[in-house]
Amino acid sequence: MLLDNILFFVFGLILGSFINVIIQRIPKGISIIRPRSFCFLCKYKIPFYRNIPLFSYLIQRGKCSNCNENISHQYIVIEFLIGILWLYSSFVFNNFYVIINFSMISSFLIAITVIDYKHFIIPIEITTFIFLFLSLEYFFDKSILLNLQGAFVGSIYLLLILLITWLITKRQGLGYGDIQLIFVLGYWLGIYKILFVIFFSALSAIIFWLILNYLKEYDKNRALPFGSFLCINSIIFYQIEINYLFRF
Image (cartoon, rainbow, N blue to C red):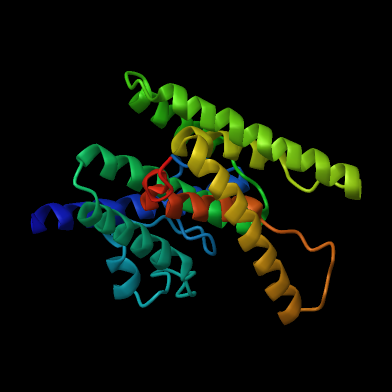
């Protein structure tokens, strides 16, 4: 029903507002619970009636109501993106639990994507939450063994890449945050999808690195947020149903 789709969209907007809090606060070591939302420029605590997802930004024309400084476009982009994500899920998936699974996990993967891209860190708080969320869902599911296989196979595969990279370059090519992330993603996707995710994440990261070096001054030591590519490709491959496409 259309009403259900609208409700999913609204919930996505609300969750998107919370995801913005996570993105802004966790890298700075600030609690995501207290204090309540405030302007990072003037420290003005935002009243609840000025903290309505999407609409407050538009009504205030992207400016703080207190100091009149510009608010980052990231806020409205993340809120709208996650709102659309939940709306999209409600149209594509017929099963309520699949909608919740895909939308919730994807929302927090978007948080990791932005944080890793901006700060080159993958917060263990987010990966732990995703793992616990999935564990509750899979606790009574017989397919949990396949999910555990995906977690361990993905982790071992990435560790081998890390070892080979170190032997060749004597540099640590991947961070430990990538390993913990791939464990959780493997747990979510299963054994086959996670291998495709790792392959296409590496491919897209290389392409992105080449484009970046073409547009900017060449730097062979330029770091890449590999976790961001893992998250984006995981969201894509979850819905492709690669098991059916490749008849696994």
